[in-house]
Length: 96
Image 1 (tube, rainbow, N blue to C red):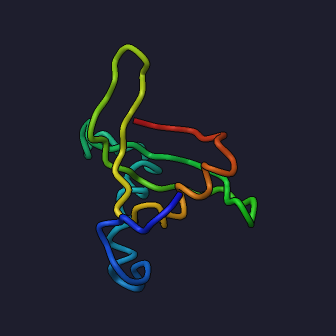
Image 2: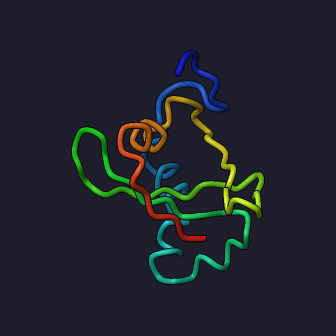
């Protein structure tokens, strides 16, 4: 992975912005992810360093019916922690 092609520059969000961006995860945890429609999915993955379970909600930009493949957006480009984690450990769980 070369370059930093994310849409957001600078550090990861902190404080209230981080809380706001993580609210969709709460919707999935209380089985209300359907409120977000079919444009989002919940990705559960394992931390590459900690081994802990993590969750993130991603926007789907395309869905390939033949292969059941979702194409998703990474707002932080190749710097996204979820992307780094699944590169090391591709064992993930997806909820749509």
